[in-house]
Length: 366
Image (cartoon, rainbow, N blue to C red; front, side):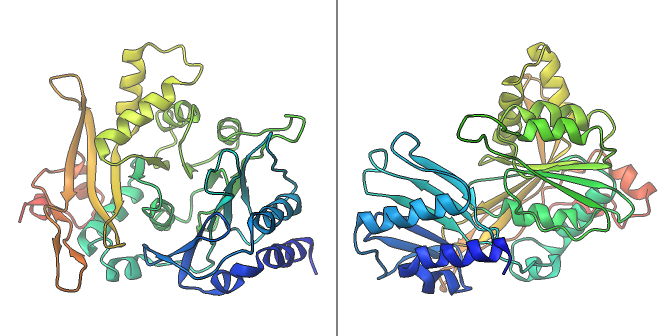
């Protein structure tokens, strides 16, 4: 057996009470709120299970063993753990006294299956027309942000968008932990490295982004922009790496672009506030907003273009597609579809010149 498979078997053994949940392919996440309260997520909905650990000590022992198996430690001095398991699953832990309910664990299960855009459309997450528009935008090399809340499906959508990148281009992917599943002829994956117990050896997304710029990428993909690496990504987008993409935590497209600016300003930039804002506005061209709705479904709720600033000096975020309303059906599900807003993208002529099947008629509001 390989070292990875040995570790995987050990982890399963430590989590004995929830092995059945681990093996259930319909469960995407396991949430442990102390030894006697365990929830799971299925199709975006949380359910309480009857599974439990015998006591806090047994749960803590399981967490300690998992930490050791992946070369990490967790203690009262270091009460938090964020690690990737050998199968690609993500585990996050907080222990008492910080966790008042008892040891709290989230396990986001990794799946090898990769959804296609055809299946994504069939699920109702996006319309065919909007998917074709995003296809065209990726082919044209538009810089793009996927915005959404936790668990909204940003990584899945970003993986799908990357499938539209021309096969002749070189992609460098940078993530905190490898989650993106990209089928491409020329793709290089980078993953960050946490500091050791002596506080040495840390490699951040920002470090990897700086290295990536020297490795002749055509496109740079950042799994999640969450810190000062936003500045390097913005500058890369503005200096020839067209078609770069990333995700950001935000609930609206307007919040996404402001958050990106705030993250970039946290770096060691010598740019003035005005210069930084112009860099951001010229770097990001499209924002795709995705949301997890109250019925558990995940939908692309808008596709917007960033077009400079409005008369008040705010970022001018122009919606191209949006869902005008969501109506709950008798089945309890929310029904609504992306529709053109009537706003025509500023690069319409570029779409036409490249013989892509779009005209002003395609963006006429219903």
